[in-house]
Every structure is written in C-alpha cells, then in structure tokens.
Length: 192
Length: 246
Image (cartoon, rainbow over all chains, first blue to last red):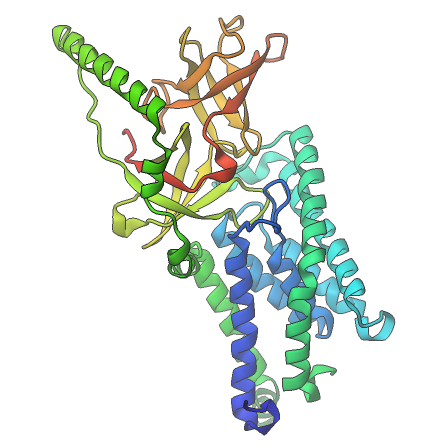
C-alpha cells in the first residue's frame, strides 16, 4: 500500500487532478443509469449537482462557478441546449461556495444532505422557470420543448421533490471519499 | 513586462486549468457527449441483454397471432396486386439494447447501445414490444439517443385506427399522452387503438402507438383524448430501430 504523503508533490498533484476529473466523469455516467433503489417515479439522483455542491463547499466562488459552467455545458450536450443546465449548476456552485460550511455548519452527513436538498430544489426551480418563459427562445432555432403552465407545475412538483430527496440521500456516497481525498492531497491549499 | 511575467507565474496554472476545463466541456457539448455515451456503452456491455430476450418474450399467443397476421398479409398483398397498390418497402430493423435513460429528469429519453457503426441515423423510428416508443435524435459511433413519444416536446401525427380521425399526440411523461383532434366531433371511444397517421412526416403510417383511455369532447380549442402508450416505456430492455420512412 503506497502512502499518498510519500509521493512527490508533482505526482500527488497529477493524481489529485485525475481523481477530481475521474469522479466528475463517473457522475456523468451515473446520470444515465436508473438502478433499482436509486429511482423514484423514473427520476434518479442529480449526481452532477451533488458533485458541484461538494466541490464548491470549501473552494472559492470562482472555482464553484467554473465547475458548474463546465459540467452544465456537458449535460446540455447530453440532453438539449435549452433549457440550459449551466445556469442552475453555476448557481449551485456559487451558493455552495458562499455557505462557508466549515465556519457555520457542523461537519456531518446531515448537513451535507440538507445543503444538497435545498440546492437541488433551487436548481429545478431555475429549470422550471426556463420552461415557462415566453416563447422568444423558440426563435433561436433550438428544439424548444413547449409545455403549458399547468404541465410545468405538475412536472416541477414531481421532479423537484424526487430529485431533491434522492440527491440528498445519496450525497454522502460522494461526499465522504471526495472530501477525505482532497483533505489528504492538498491540505495546504485547501482552506485558502 | 516583468509584472506580466509575475502575474503569469502566480496565475498561469489556474488560467491553463480553467481554459482546459471549459475547452473540454465545450467540445463535449458540441459533440453531444458522444465520447461519454460511447464509454458508457463499453462499460455496460457485459450487462446488456441481447436479442435473445426477443425469443423469451414470444409465447404461444403471439405465435398464433403471427400466423393469422401472415395469412392476412398474404391476402392483403394479393388484393393490392389486383388494384396495383404501390407497396411500401419493408426494411429490416436493428435490434439494440437499452443501456441508459435520460441525463436529466425533465426529458424523457433513452440511450441505445447501437450507433452509427451499426447503421443507425438521426430520425430513425424506434419500436419496442407494444408499439412505437420514439425517434432517434442524436447518434454517436456506438450509441444513440432516443426522444420518447412520452416527452412533452414530442409531437407526432396520429389517427384513430377504427374511424381514421386524425390528430396529434403530445407526451405527458411515463406512459401517458394526450391526443388532440383536428375534427370538432371525432368518432372516438375508450378502448380505440391509436396508430401513426399517413400525414406524419416523421414516421411511416400505421405504427401502433397506444389506446384511448378517456375522451373529453368539451375541451377547447379542440377535443382531446387521454392515451395510454402500449409499449412498456418505463421498463424497456431492448428496442428495434427502423429507417425513417422518407
């Protein structure tokens, strides 16, 4: 078993990046799955949202926003450019970085679950608002998913609640390995 | 110049990392996540159920119906020859496993484990046991993404099989859909079968879609019917992809 502290700083850095990118990539793959026990009414946990929230918790607002933008762009590619996921994920990154968990909130899985619950309700609200915005967006030539007010409201209730419950329940699965890894590898620049 | 170099020494790595991240994200966005989907297809390959599910699902009842259908098709062909009817060419379908669902909760999509290498193109119709399920909207080398007919953005031209009254079908999530009629007083009743219409630009006519559950003739601006999609959309394990009609 190799100890991480024995590795050279350069190797540690590269390994750190690999784990970060790898975990985000794993979340992208998990988005496509609906495993038994991981879905409610055909809706799975929002893994990208969990990842962005955990990434931003102890980082700067800028880092949180960049992570949200990059992953939102990729998710847009995997579904559709409109409604965009970049807005909601940037908001999640920025808010999660602003919370300053280590200062105000205790370090346990209840608090991370609560944060993810709130943020995913917020993220689904942003998406729902994009659906009910007036149809000017249709003129952009994108494949515009038209929904009526009542349809959006029904879908919003179902999606926001299921996604928030599942995401918050599954967030510790990502939170523990990732935070303990980041604390071990770059403890000196982690709390800047 | 010196201050520029010092700035670069302090922030250079961050600038490179940020542009690298956003660049990769942009490429993935433009290619519609093709690399991710292909990798996912490779990973899930050991768990994909193949075409042998097809055999497992056939039972005596289906065989009996197939036998009757063949007989009717034969008669139909002979009759068509008599009246010199232009025959639409039946092309073979591509059987492909369903490897994933939609990448977010607002869309009703599925990911198939066959792509452009197997001859699938954008616009192909996707069928499952039970009837039509959707249309291919993007293709990568080894996978393809299907917009299900249960998605609210999906609109297809359909007809009531019994009375040939036309309308269009809009998805409402899971296995529900709404059919809006073009006629003010359509001849329709619960239990009627719904098929794709001959005026549909996306699908060839006559593909089974669903059954009428209830009818609301008072609805404005056009009468509506609630449709139950016959294909088991929530638990699809494989699907058959057919070339687009036009």
